[in-house]
Image (cartoon, rainbow, N blue to C red; front, side, top):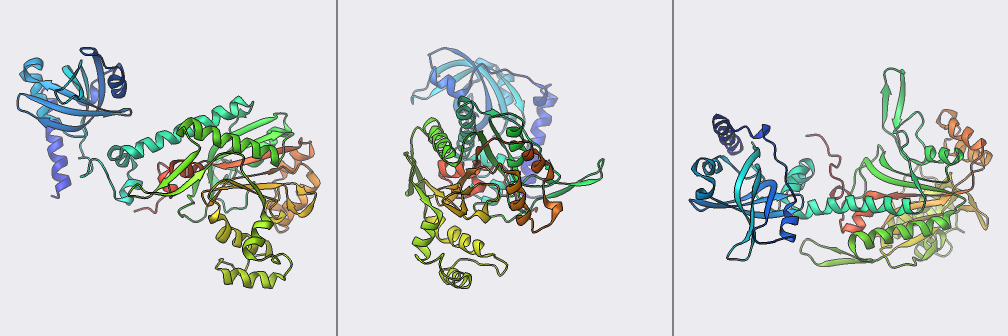
Length: 482
């Protein structure tokens, strides 16, 4: 029997001993009156409290003992005395382990060392942990275990728990910001007959009752635009999106997106919207517009300044600056040769615009640390945007880049149904079955001019919370099965 199994058997024996005394932890109930942090914050000597949490430390002093219990808000020390509880109740502590949950009633006091504590007058066992906590109760470091068993990561690493609480606050503040500006939140289908709104490989599934295939959505865009057709002027959705593509430091097969659309807006109004939104979130969650990224030793390795206004730079100007002033004047073959020479990964199947995009993604985007709006991308990249009047080879679009990666694309939405059909047909390579006819029919009923914006919530959290890998801001990232 290995060590873990032996410990499990010991804990099962303690559970059996509790039940033999008429105590079944899993049937007990207890209602705390406040959190551990609130008890500490509102300390008054002798004030009665009722708290509950997981045992994270246990120091036996013979006829008395100190325990630490922890809830979501933090930890507090509790003090148990045999002469107060009585020998029978005090003896129950012999059957408790780290990881068990208890509820305690008692009064607040301060120890000789100055620590706020609870002097127990009554306690209840609420759950028995049959498996021991990580060997290092604080500081679980094995990356594989942290991702596969995130609950252990949350138990062992308070800073990880705080990070995900901040992620929750970020999403709350996004909603607050949009609601305050008159946007209404909606939910649109995850299962779609034709995936659209982005160029990505979808996950495919089958609906037995209908006898047909469906796809998990790759974007939120097309259903939300139908709502503009239906008469809603400001709409948004925060939802999961699925793309059957690679896994990397910046990519997870399922991720969270915000998409927002505003009738009578355009890509410039979307710049104001996303700049205001991110600054609002940073100020309300972090209390600062200066974000520091630190290494494992706590040294600052990167500082991001979110102070507005954020600069606007045209896509072609950035490419010319990095790849040569004549980049768009030379032949496609010469562009391909230069791109390979500069280290961009170029597939033989790439079209000419994809070669330029590979140069942008590989050599330019990673250098954009402070916020910058990269505007007027090639029209082939975004078939759902309006052409730029001053340069019809580009569209009225921006990519907001921060921390060396795209955070939010946005554009002036195409609302001409004839032009939209032509561009989607070109993207589909003439395959009619890939066209979302329902969306095109909706456009033919009339959609107002509009601006639209997408924001990658996970990448936003990476940037704001100083994380270098997307898995560190997703509670349960996708992993290869064991």
